[in-house]
Image (cartoon, rainbow, N blue to C red):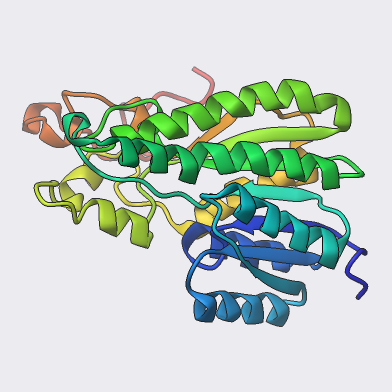
Amino acid sequence: MDATEGRVSLITGGSRGIGRALALLLAEGGGTVVVGYRRDARQADRTVAAIEAAGARGLAVRADLETEEGVRTLFDAVAEECGRLDHFVSNAAASAFKHILDLRPHHLDRSYAANARPFVLGAQEAVRLMDRGGRIVALTSYGSAHAYPVYAALGAMKAAVEAWVRYMAVEFAPYGINVNAVNGGLIATDSLDYYYGVPGMPDIRTVLERTPAGRAGTAREMAEAVAFLLGPGAGYITGQTLVVDGGLSIVAPPFFADAGPGLALPPRPRRDTPDAPAPGS
């Protein structure tokens, strides 16, 4: 198919984890899926091959989004190869997991350069290519609104991204562009393994048992949430942050998992249970 025909989607950090899951999900609908990556060309090529096997056109672009030049390189490639853009998904992220008193200026600078700045610069570039309107979605995380050990540098940047989403939603609405965020909780990816591998972190199993869903989410579940916001059913949704965390952010101590037998949740009642209320009562 001609590169200018059909839907064009750009995903940063699209060669692995949630970005890859989203790339493959969008590929099922055809069009062109552009995968931005920083280092692993082999993994990016495998993702492109999987995109094309699913029936879409795949394109991998290597770019360091921590620099202004890298952002421009990525969008120049989209402009040259596709001519336009429908979806921009800002997924790539990086930071240092340290206590606030241990953060140095270069840690703060990198957190900004890897998370907030490329989203803003990327959105500016995306708007110029969205000639028929479009959708922008940023991936954030549970640390944007809650405090977790050694997560301040990244959590603060994710909170900033969510604020940018709200401002962009207002300013880009006249162009027919919706802007939203998807805030992920404990999602089973390499990033989750890395965070819970920090010395002193609790066993991930003790955290999952306090999550109402009782498990980690999957990259595919995050991808499905992003795809919804990119799709026609979300046409009247903008400036919002969709939380995908299995209920993690709505619970607080004392946790059900820590309660004694007298406060344990009862088994799910059956319709033939004598004390069960009648339907409509």
